Image 1 (spheres, rainbow over the protein chains, first blue to last red):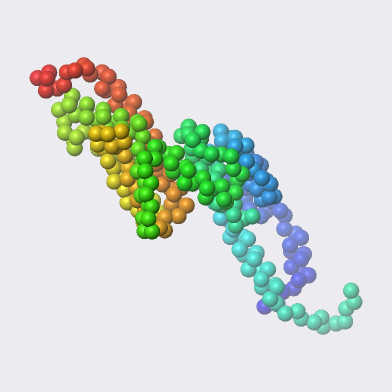
Image 2: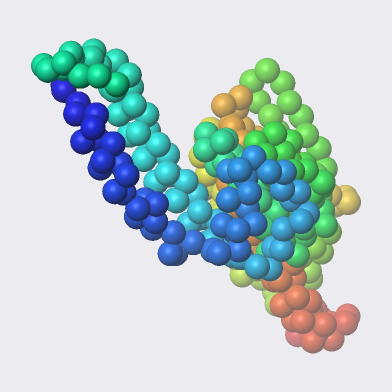
Length: 97
Length: 180
């Protein structure tokens, strides 16, 4: 498989961050106070959360969202592995960096 | 981070579950949201669903015996209901309803397990649920078990009110036989 890295970089730069996955059905409270801080590696004491601010169903949706993220992450890993394993092809014409 | 998020967020799920049954105080919430917290909390949470009377474990099987004061009172009133309405325990609608509820909540958990519902009243914790499982019963299965037990003991709490109401409306000493 040949990968045109220049084209690949252009396509990556055109992808908008908010097009990644739909977060519209998720609890804003859980995203702000649990998901984002957790993903940034922050400590979140269990007793600091407001358990009236969300429902069990909101957590179920968050688990579904994690599943979607894991799928995307797995595909990205797969692509990254393919790029990593690919052998470089020399340019046909002379080029200087 | 993503790899551990699911397990970590289960600790929040556990807290929210207990909060929704008004039992959050029964849990130790002095942990941070992380995978270790969940694994540590899940066994304590099982004990906090009702009254853990005993827990026995060997190489092959773990067995718990859980009860609650409300469950005991429920089955005491069931006896009174039988006397006053002239029905057998087997035909008592409250006995049947509780048995159906317990079976319904426990029949679809993950893993290999079994249970027995005891409805005796001859000593302090004579009524209870004996639940046993094999060595492959993991923390996810425990989560399902905890959810089921919370619902079961909540059932006894709420249905006890209905039963108390019926019993309190009866003449205190007159049974159906006596009235005849």
